[in-house]
Amino acid sequence: MKVALVHLRYSWTGGVERYLRQLADFLAEEGHDVTIVCRSATGDAHPKVKFVHLRNLALGSGWRHWAFAKAVERHVAQSDYDVVYGLGRTWTHDLIRLGIGLHDDYLERAHDETMTPFRRLIHMGSIKNRLTLRMEARALAPGAYKRVVTNSEMLKRDVIERYAIPPDKVTVVYNGVDLERFNRDKHAVAASSLRDEFGFTKDHCVLLFLGTGYARKGLAPTIEAFERVAEAHPEARLLVVGFDSNQARYRRMAEARGLSGRVHFAGGRKDAEVCYAASDLYVLPTLYDPFANTTLEALASGLPVITTAANGAAELIEEGIQGSVLEAGAHPDALANAILEWLPLKRRLAAREATRSLAAQYPADRTARRSAELLEEVAVMRPESI
Image (cartoon, rainbow, N blue to C red; front, top):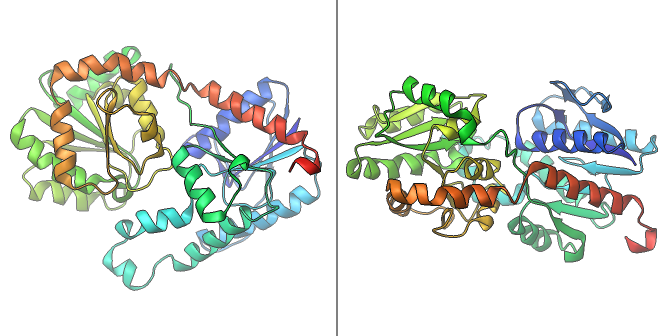
């Protein structure tokens, strides 16, 4: 096949970007003619993968996405691809993958929590939100796609309900995980060094919170819940990994609760696999994640996962076996109760084999292979089957 994979950027960071890179490499290895259509690209790619860069002048994130989508429309009209796979905010494609979810869902479930009072007052980002919703509606309009791909059953239900898409046109392909990279046994030495760096002893039980965008991911209720956890278990520690421009506010929140010596902020790091290996329990009370990749990464690293039903990846977890799933927006007390149930060493160790076994069912190459099969199916579709 002559395949176009379309996304605003090609990068080594980000969940969608990781999927793009893995799929492009897989298709190239299988002998397909692969072109990545993007606005910007950083990092090396497979030597057989080609790039088309579409850089239109635009001010602001919303208009930048819109200008890119228009440029993609023109480019595809002038090209002879067998199949075009849209992975972001564009509307010219044969398949579209909703890897970051639906914007309306995000606005309803999480957006307000990410805004400061001042930003709410001035309606910060309202133009970008309107443009994003217009692009999404155009991408999912009748006749704009042959197939829609979601990364969870939760998202499949949402897109069918919001856009009246026929269920037989929506396929779920779960995200995959690199089982070699996220293997705690491979990182024992580095994990020990990281624990030493933050003053964690062998007696400390380390809870890991990992994600960019603390508000949506649920750091505030995590800190609130951890206050009660720390009172009951002085040996508990909370390690916060990831970037957020408002990190200082969360530091103050922890300090105000007397947790400054027990909550450690590591900032953005490139060694997530080591962070998992250095931890004992993963906590992600997210407000909205169509499928949080960190869920599978933590499971592959042998960690029980505490998350919410607003995380599409939660549908893989068996309650009490590989972790716990709370209601979306659950009260910090409910989160504290779940953490306390998983703190005993015996229970965490007993779950380790089950977590790793679950993650092993979703290797990255399986996701890439299923995605490639869908592309092949769509590439040979006759008009009457669309």
